[in-house]
Image (cartoon, rainbow, N blue to C red; front, side, top):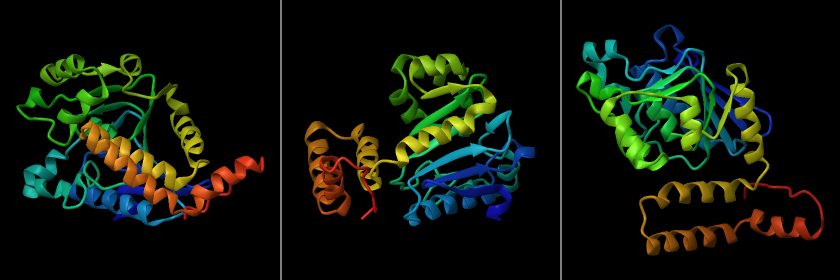
Length: 259
């Protein structure tokens, strides 16, 4: 099942590439894709060799079209969310490792929400991002309504949510929604380049830092300080915490063990 609708490829340098693979259905999320994407998340989390994950698409016109309405009409709509991962087995998944969305084509509705659930976005210069649910009497209930106003200026986010109209890649880049904008045929390579920049760093330090940064928007200052102190206490107990300063003093590259 996983090999059919979600491809998982382990690359050199601690990088995994996860590919949504229902191109004939514009990668619409059905129960099988949701279960397979959840399995990919758990696989990457369990593999100590993986430091960064890229989420991409086998369809160069559409990153993901959102929920598969055929599955919904068949009464299987509840299964496009999983108990551990939420919509698509992903948007609510507990992940410590950073994920990069590598986007070509349209990322709208649930596809946009998948991007918003990632930590960084590399996108083609002809992409579009949007939450058109209100045009169909629906809501962007898979995290879009909460994450978009934190990713871009609030008034712009509210306009996108209330009108349902998308923005193009150039505006998304200007607003800070996407990290890097490149030609369509360069998207995956640019995402891999970004992943390599992350993967050379101490993996546990990256994981603690990214996890805390994700939570920071929900914490007040005192809570954030407490969470930071707890994370530092955990990090101090690791071999990598000692290796970093030692390598700096010895003027050599650090050898990270992830322990």
